[in-house]
Image 1 (cartoon, helix red, strand yellow):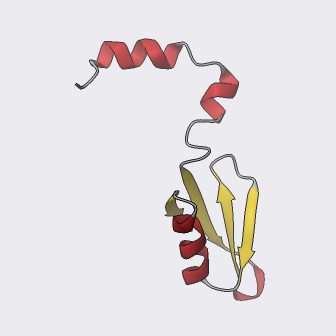
Image 2 (spheres, one colour):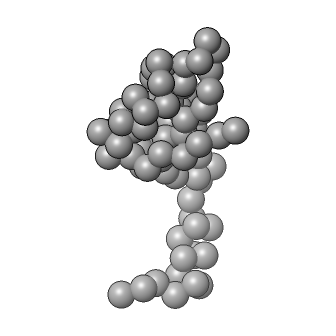
Image 3 (spheres, rainbow, N blue to C red):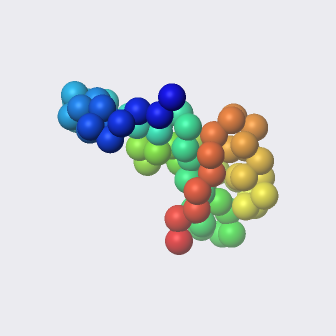
Length: 73
């Protein structure tokens, strides 16, 4: 069952600012280049989750924690 656009809009309008900031917090992590060839993994809110030595390790860490990885250039 797919919600109608007006139902989605109504639900989104009920979110507080903090609720909106937490959207995706535990589902999405982004990976970005750090210093010395390392990579940092961040939660959707920008908080640092991990610093690892390769992109492959960063990707594995995100997937191991059942999150969706995204990259930031």
